[in-house]
Length: 167
Ligand code: GNR
Ligand code: NI
Image (cartoon, rainbow, N blue to C red; front, side):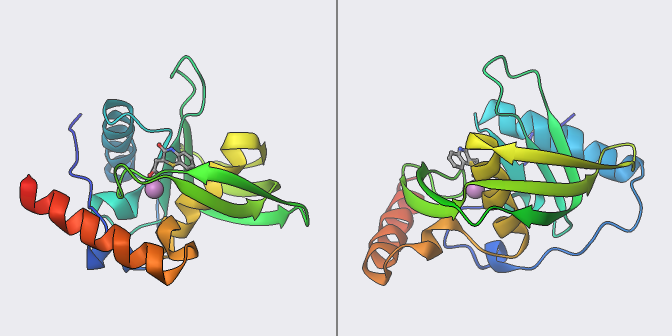
């Protein structure tokens, strides 16, 4: 296993669109293991491959309190989402220290492949529903701050650049 480097907003590479995984092979399983290690170490509740500069449709999530319920989503698709929306506070490992409210579908059903390449469907609500939508945005090259006002985005960009200079 290996820790991966997480890209920080406003890095251009965060806006690349991920390609579908052609085959769930050992290379992908290694990526999943490394992403999980990176997510737990951060610590975070989710990580999209885009954030570690791999532009393929792979997501890991663990919203359990015990940090022992890893979910792997390869080539995820939202097959249903509730009309009901919900506002909740989000953060992102690619935008450290920034938390703000984003409106998302309250519930979603996701179809994906697991690390064995087997298809599955999962009904998501609560933090899991927020997280899967946040991660699928990453795969499309979208970061949650892009839902905020342009004034906030400008402020966040300059704060991130300052932070980067200090590191
Ligand atoms: O660790 C994370 N916490 C979180 C909290 C509220 C909404 C979304 C998230 S995802 C984030 C990890 C991350 O940046 N994933 O892309
Ligand atoms: Ni994120």
